[in-house]
Amino acid sequence: MTCRSLVIVDYSGTLSCAAALFALPHRLEGELRASGLAAQGVKDGASLFARVVRPTWQEATTTALGYGGAIVAALGGEDGDGEELRRAAGTFVGRYLAASTIEEAWLPLLTEPARRPGLFLLVATDHYAEATGAILGHLAALGLAGAAVRDWGRKGGPPLAVANSADLGFPKESEGFWEACRSFLPLGGVRRIVVVDDFGANEAYADPRDVPRRRRAVGEAVGRVFGLRPEIVFFRLPSPPWEGDVVAGAVSASVAEVLGLLKEV
Image (tube, rainbow, N blue to C red):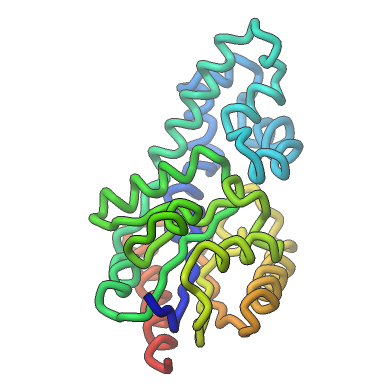
């Protein structure tokens, strides 16, 4: 296929607002108790992020370690006597990924490649190794077939792929991430690139001061690799709690903005 337009959509906090909702303090505390991690000393989100997420983020999201492995390593269960911890970590990660569903209001964008020849849609995420299969499963639940970037490069398929930093070995802010995407996908003739991303703005424990830097870094990395300045659609939700209509309205507005940009190609 010849790709003229590329739409890059972030996952957590963008395609999946539910993933961001999972991390809200009241929800996260309940999930830590239900999984058994609270009994291992991780009783709230502040503890989870301080003891697990932040110290392990770089390694865990650019290798096959995974979220479960990061939890076990950070909390000291890697020496063979931490079966309860491993079980709790697996339960927590499973619940998190299962809850990270895709908002149906994104469907008019996700199905656009089927209506528009030359459009490729790339779900691009800084995430753990376990997430790739979960994302593909959530897409399949909406009737959408896709593949991980490396698998797509070997087999081809519909113009929809999932690029996960854990699979590619680089974060989205790195040129290496986008070089890998370009090498495995048919993106040589792209004339317009649209990036839809919250850049961490919808994440409960992200530093809002870092959002402009992330936005700039991702845009510059994409631009350098493809030689084309991307259009940025900043997906920002209002402060939680989020009602369904609020989320659907924000998604629909972003979908309309993207489709409007694509008309110019």
